[in-house]
Length: 220
Image 1 (tube, rainbow, N blue to C red):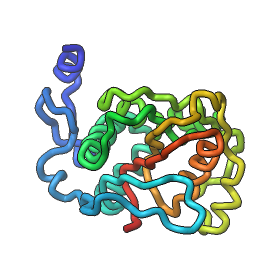
Image 2 (cartoon, rainbow, N blue to C red; image 1 turned 45 degrees about the vertical axis):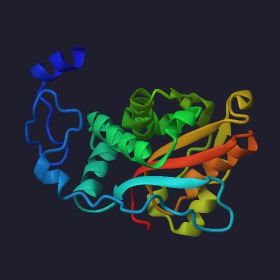
Image 3 (cartoon, rainbow, N blue to C red; image 1 turned 180 degrees about the vertical axis):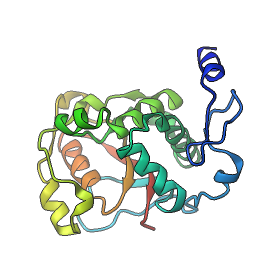
Image 4 (tube, rainbow, N blue to C red; image 1 turned 90 degrees about the horizontal axis):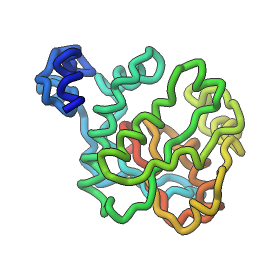
């Protein structure tokens, strides 16, 4: 009821083109833009490399076209409201591909406090929080924190990314991680170095299974 009232005052708009949508819309994408999205047809993205700590990857769509532009606006141009639509798309994919009811928690990739203050929000945390509501799985993102203010991964080559992100994260309470299965949420997957380093510290704290869940990726 509260959401409907809010939608009456502030009508939902397509996150891609800005078209005003019906007030009962849950995924804020118009029909025309939805048809332009290149959804991943594969069940999941296979982890690459010998030393992967996450067990599998679930990805909604390709990192291209209108999706790439929208994610850039979401991250860098103060469009935090996009999180609802991204999370609901991800929830649909997770329900299609996993026995999601058996997962214990959701954890998001953290930003360093300095960067989060500058941006005003952590885009991955917002998605994880809404995903928690959609799936009824507890959001335990505070268990993973970033202690190293790294350079932007997008500006680095693969090997440099691995060095840059090394030892950037730590666990705040390992007893809540031990033996648990979880979704590790981020917005995009490129080389996978950030997700892998997060997964490494989670596995070392005793995590049983980690499924990385992302909105988009250029990988197959």
